[in-house]
Amino acid sequence: MSQYVAESGMPVLIERYEQLVAYFEQACKPRANWKIGTEYEKVAVWAANGHAVPFTGGIEEILRRLAERYDWEPIVEDGRVVALHGAAAAITLEPGGQLELSGQQCDSVHCAHSEFKEHVKQIVTVGDELGVAFLGLGMQPISTLAAIEWVPKKRYGIMGPYMLRVGSLGQRMMKQTATVQVNIDYGSEGDAMTKLRTGMGIAPLLTAMFANSPISDGRLNGFLSFRGHIWTDTDPARCGLLPFVFDRNCGFSDYVEYALDVPMYFLVREGRWIDMTAFTFRRFWTEGYAGERATLADWNAHLTTLFPEFRLKGYIEARSIDSQAPELMLAAPALIKGIFYDDDCLGAAWDMVKRWSWEERLALYHDVHRQALRTRIGGLEVRELAWELVQIAEAGLQRQRQATNGESEALYLERLRDLVHRGRCPAELIVEKWNGTWRREPTRLVEGSAYHIAA
Image (cartoon, rainbow, N blue to C red; front, side):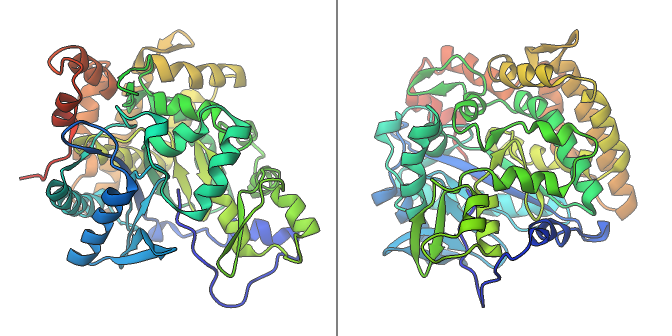
């Protein structure tokens, strides 16, 4: 989840509806300025037993050592180190101590690869000193929800109790799951809506290709992407697929209307975190609260608390992918860049999924969590669609390479290409090892899925 950034300078009050729409309009960028940004979440466990590392005496100490040894500035809340700030990136914590690198905005996946490689080196070096392993999995595999310490951030103190009121799996989402998210730019309102629509259309395919969370609470959970399933019962007001984006006439104002009617989480004033879960943003904007009026900073913060499969902010965020082993992490931004930054490829991806009804989309969205690439829709297995999607991405990356005369980024798709060609997702390999050579032993799971420093 995004780190809250306090508003600098004088607050800008929201006086007109047009300001909400303009927030997105002002984020449009010419193609020459488009970047790719990746956010990598990782679960941390004690190497000796596979249990989640607590914040106190574990994750916080990792942050302290990273700050002391590398070029990171600690972010402190109530005397506790809860994040790190760098020159072009940040390290933040999810509610259960999942460590997230919010990477820099890169021109290429090669740039992202260099950054991620250095990040892995740093966290593995510090983790080894403390007996901590970072796992290439989409959720905590051994520790139960109750056994995982909450990160002491004020926003989580508001969100945690609220989750119990709106769904049955929200706290699991907060404390146990990990994902890799990819951020892309848009050039115009039409471009943004095309990307958002296509993203929502292929979201179930992305979940199936990267499914990687079959183990939780120390046993197989019956899903290949349990992380994906958890989002289906987290908070229906702010999660899942958005039906209005499939309307060809959809625009920024439609997303504004959606966001206005989602309940808020919090309001921050002079360091005070105010519980606003009883208010939609529309109500706060029109009525105010305790003398406070809505500002553009409040709007920005609210947009970061919406969790659809593809999210619109000052950029578009792909959110459908389980966290991966290091060798597959860069496949996510490579796939997204190949598809979304080439007009022909974006159109080809949409052509794959445009004929499905809303009911078919919903059924597929739910079914891939258990069956991944073996799910069927319209007489086809998702495996066949995923294979086509990889080929589309490769073509897009090839054309982008030719345009820049650079090294092809398609090399980051090789491992994914091999898996999809065999009709396998990462979770199926984990299940085979868990039932086989790992003998369902947590220590073997850790040894087999832990991050290591690349030679």
